[in-house]
Amino acid sequence: MHELSITQSILNIALETAEHEGAKKVNKIKITLGEMTGCVPQYIQEYFDIVSENTIAHGAALVFKRIPAIAKCLDCGGETHLIRFRFRCDHCGSQKLTIVSGKEFLVESIDIDD
Image (tube, rainbow, N blue to C red; front, side, top):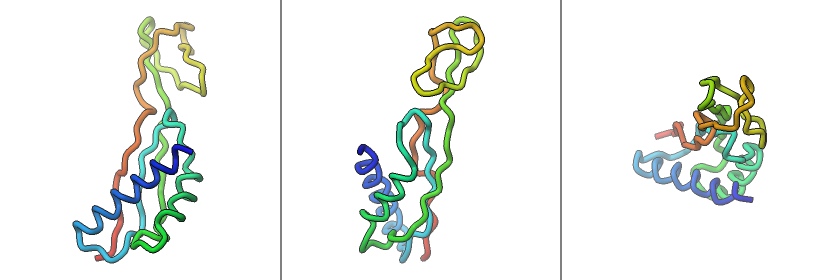
């Protein structure tokens, strides 16, 4: 359910940007989304369709760029793709990991009509 508040924030960013640029329509919003955020793109799009009603962003496509959850092992230096709750190095089995990517969440770009 946290997707609803996140979706409202995406809409707010899009509308503020559109207003600043004097836009008449928001067509597309590109979003970078890390695997570790736990957000489901389908839910975000569905919520966006609802919260954007009666705004210039209604009907805008949300395009998601997914970033994998990657950790670096502090023991062997290897990189591991983290899957769900498995925080263990694929190379040496160590649990001493530091997150390299996968926590990102940002509005990358907004396509508008002037």
